[in-house]
Length: 516
Image (tube, rainbow, N blue to C red; front, side, top):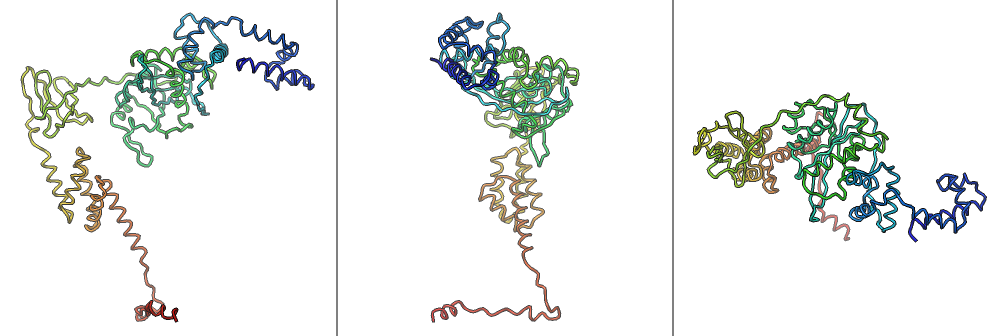
């Protein structure tokens, strides 16, 4: 006897027991949480009649019987799949699927689980109550990642960006096979705005490192690329703390929804196929089924919200860049010619980004730092070398290093400290040296010599740490000075009493007294 049949028999006998105790059909119906007509029907059945009823109920044909093998196979492959996800899979694979009530699918899936003993792997999901906002007011965005299995059962990690209109619950998902960068994040925003056919007044984010470069006591600093994009699209931004349900609980639920309903149990082929599949899922399920909270279909609500969105225009296309490895002589090869970069730029396996702008090549580092520009050669076999690139500008840096080191008592120790910084922050050595020079001008030599020794001993290769330690020592000296009390004379006319020192007895005298 399976669990469902056992549960039915328990309910049958419980109903008869309550009836024997004198409870009315209405009272039993409230207790059993079912219709009172069902109670009357069960009370009118004998045990043999009820047994026949259960047999007929289990053996009657069901509208989903012809999909039994498909449902069973998906449940075995993905035991945690929900009935809602199963309905989406059926819609995806069977275009002739009849219109079904979600409750019908739920009952059938539970029946298949019991028939083939496929237990449900529960996936916890948190819900957040958030105040409804006006149409067009806000969209929320977040990132997620998930491991899929490919056709060879090997794991493949995919990354995705999702955005949702807060009022209509209209969703969009953008997939990437590699971790998101600022550039791909901007592309994802553009795809979402195109999908929504507009932009909301405000966008809500986590404090993500792709979008923010720093935070100082609540002041958020955008990365240069994203800041330029925000300015061009005139976006209104709001950054909130991680896992903040009051601010972005809706989008956190969307990330879980994408993982649990779309990605769970799905086979990975390639990123383009996955993107096409998610667009189909959004149409069928993500935006095509009534939302569990609003009880409204996002597509229908989006028809209303579109009228409240700001118009969207695509940003200007950025020029495509070419990657080239640097040669040891600080040049790169392009279309049969060699172009120079500033001396000292070369490092092993370092590439530069080359943008074509009219008749010029603009060269940037991998960190998007401008290096130089050249006119494009009209023929092949040329060496285009900027005379300024021949000068080793590192010599000027060495002069600055010597100047700052001379400000310390132990010059060699200072040079050692600067070399530690060069090893870890070569690109920022000049800025670090200038920061150290500025910091020590405000303190006495004894203090910054002491801090230098501590930085070298503890291997603190940072001008910021050096500056903070100086401030800390300065604060300690102030507190020590403040603790020195001022002597107030009881008799201002006589200083002789203030100079009197009390007699001090030798501890040996006390030992003699105690011993005697």
